[in-house]
Image 1 (cartoon, rainbow, N blue to C red):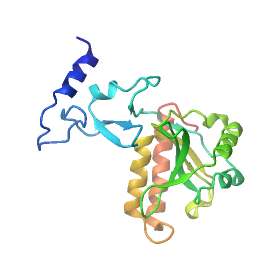
Image 2 (image 1 turned 180 degrees about the vertical axis):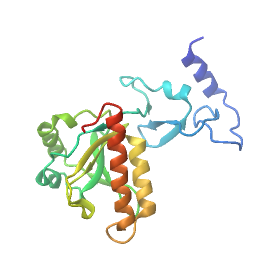
Image 3 (image 1 turned 45 degrees about the horizontal axis):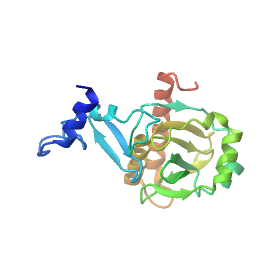
Image 4 (image 1 turned 45 degrees about the vertical axis):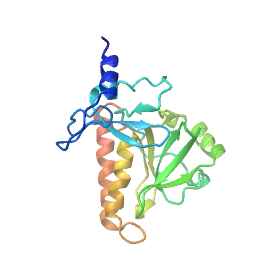
Amino acid sequence: MSASFSVLRRLANRPDPGPAGERCEMCAELIGAPHRHVVDVESRHLQCVCTSCYLLFTEPAAALRYRAVPDRYLAFGQTAITAAEWDALEIPVGLAFLFANSAQGRTVAFYPGPAGATESELPPEHWRDLLRNHPELDVLADDVEALLIRMPGSAGRESPGDCLLLPIDTCYEFVGRMRLLWKGFDGGSEARHYIDEFFTTMNARALARGGGRP
């Protein structure tokens, strides 16, 4: 019996999840923390899953409703995106994450704020122009990876910007934390401190895994 068939049989006959501990949202097996996630590409909902269920959705070429969120971290260093290129994307702030939504057939942007992640539609022609100008950024896996971009001078910062490729669940965790910390119109000092810490941590993680620029 194949491993995939075994997991699918458990999905069809999963027990009552019960109250004890966190469980896989597909087969109801107990899972620990940290654990892996899959994305429902239609609803963009993240599901917490066990390793066995996660492995069912790791084939990027398969036409599946769910896709496994990979564990890839890349740091592109100080972003070479110009202010004019960023303004052409019509994102109203200088900090956002962008990912390819396969269900809609377009790239979308989300930026943090007091209400959580707010969507901003990207003019597709300007997004294509940006990727032509910066082909190193054209490496996203649809639905499961995102570019997190901080432009120079955003959030009251004077230092150069940053550009990272991160798992999509890490980006949602980032904006969720920002929602809790946000104060006033511009986020406040605590939120700005968290942004700095987050980028430092993610850059270090990418560098440690061979995907960063020192």
